[in-house]
Image (tube, rainbow, N blue to C red; front, side):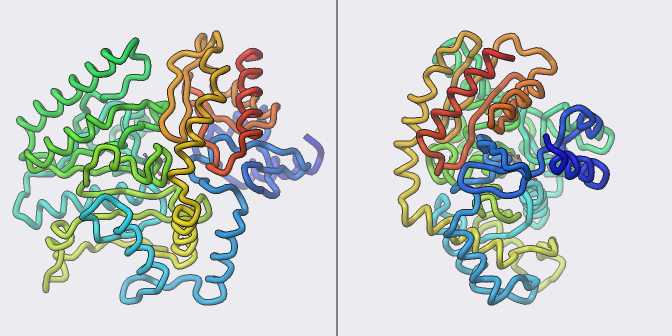
Length: 438
Ligand SMILES: Cc1ncc(COP(=O)(O)O)c(C=O)c1O
């Protein structure tokens, strides 16, 4: 690192409290000051490049500095940057809401906006609870969640998250919502074992709902892939059955597609693979192609109707200052244009297969276990990973121009969809080198 980069890193350490970080570690591991980015590459202030193999925390779909998204935001800047959405509306938010409703599973015609993923989780949780209250069901004051689930880190979202590392310090603040077995088992020895895990998880859900539906507002799940658990993948059969069971027992289903939405799992939304409509669909991350914070909760006529009243206090009195920000909405519209114009979901089907084939050296690597993929996500576990593995691996990867952030012993790839075959080949080759070296 030269003096310029070192100076930025030092100033950042002094002034910026970085997210999800033990800041003391940066006494030894330098922060990387990024000056610009293009396509799949980030460039630091010294001109060194890094392949963004995690899509900048799972947000980037079509590469950095994408000319079409840039142009859409630049054009919107000349018209309207932002207006509060209470009492006002604007073209981008109306068009985005209409288009999301048309693309989402049928029956989700009402869009409520937030900023980050966690705010979408909060909105869905509050709406579900409040819906039941409006119906006179005052006992439905808790949620049920899955083992290893992750839904964000604000206090409400954390209360339905099951990741000890993020939860434990705040445990006294958090409501202990019941946790059910997850259908996801990436170390299942064979297909039969995976099937059994799905059956067991469904049986547990059925038993739980039979006993506790009257006190449960909603089941919250990450459809098909539990990302923060370590890209733990599961069958659409669980989702389909979970939808049927929750509907039968009068419990909402909240589908948190904050990570899985916008094509990550191979379909535009993961729920499509189970042919279900949840009561709430939470979206964020890829919604703006990784440009601007925006989240959205789509819900049904039934839920919307329960809040529609002459009485103000029966409304959903929730807001964020930047709700429905016009610049974020045009970025999202540009993302939907790209999906449409380039037939991205169909193109990704081929890309996903190529990526799977190209990753074969990793699948066969002596240290790799539980190699798995789902749509545009590739993941595997590493044998012999000790406590410091993730940090060490990330450092070695960075030295080889790769941005990788293992979760525990799980290494995963979630690069922009526009990543070329040459770039993906380089990613595989250098990841093999890191595995050999670490
Ligand atoms: C499934 C899921 N839900 C919620 C969140 C929280 O989103 P945010 O970090 O934007 O608050 C994440 C973030 O990784 C996520 O993967």
